[in-house]
Image (cartoon, rainbow, N blue to C red; front, side):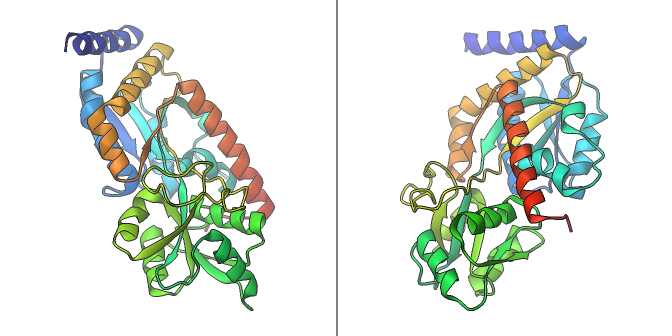
Length: 318
């Protein structure tokens, strides 16, 4: 208890010393609607993060324009730790290649705070599909006269890019069908209108547990802790499908390094809290704090990786 009090006081002092008077609240701008997966993670963190910072943390949903509305709001905010941007990999590392012009630039307008969670992609099909795993799914696509329809949550989304990686790495004959979000794609998958879907584990776990969908393979180098019996695609001989819809926190550019450091410590302490960690893991989300430098490296790496694929496939935003 004493240690926690001293740590909270130290974080508050660091923030106050670096940016003058300490803000009474921290506003986390979420670039997605309330009730969605990114919003759910932000709200799972907010109470404990507030305790770590010694202030109130409020969630402010600013959906629209593939994350750009939230991004612009934060980049124009005071660089004092009072406003943070919580977003997925799409707005942080994919949008720059999908759009000719963006109203924000990740390098110019933002300072990395911390990676928060990893959400690896899972290949699923409907329960009635006779294939047992990803290898059989790929073989089945090659036997059909027409390409196999696979849905995604939208053009240029992580699920779409995973489909492209699967086609390139395995030779699967696939037809991409973009939807406006994961929910309608999953509905059509269960109804048999499409035959496959890549999605974040948290969004699919309930359907798997309820017997409505079948897991075929994990698009990661390691198996998912919530699905220990589901092999990775690499274990099945399919290499090169490495998708991770990570979520991370960014602050406005020019936020003082001491403020960034204090925020980073608070986020990592929050993710290490047993109650918060268990809550995230139960939904299929993997807590994954990082240093600001590690997040910067991840953001740069993924920006380059997805830019190469988007250019090669000539993918354009809808």
